[in-house]
Image (tube, rainbow, N blue to C red; front, side):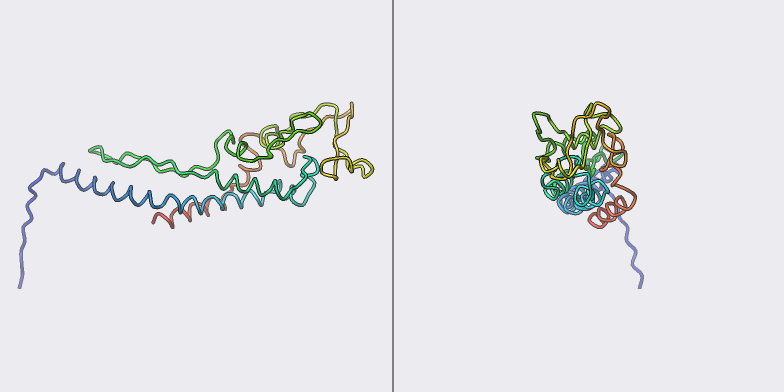
Length: 216
């Protein structure tokens, strides 16, 4: 037996579309709001792990960079970097609304400000004083590239002298024939430093996979 039905819209097409899209945007916004904490929880460690595995942080932990920069506790420095990177992840969310033609809104996952100000201010030991001088080691690594940082000084690993240094491994000594700069293998600029270099295609893939898993 066949049944035939006829459906008559009592509303105009435009009003019907508006109601459908308004309900869709309401459900979309509800879903996105619920996803924010999960996305942040997953993306933060992905980026922090990538930075932790950089040759710079690894040298802070196990190599000579910590000695050059005068770190007393390399593990503390590395953990502060990790935690600051993880905390930097945030979501920019403007709820979606139907304007009659399209859905307007924004949902963006953002990590680390372009000027790195959030990371710099969030790391307690990003700068320290030594013999009356400000040692802005994080800014040096991020921004100074091959620029001279300290004129007429050099780093020495002389065993008879390092016992008087902060790190007990290296010391900066006066030398009119030399000036100190971050070694090229670790140096960075605002657009090319140990943080930006860490977020490679593998990290980006992990981030995209996590976001897609949460959203879809």
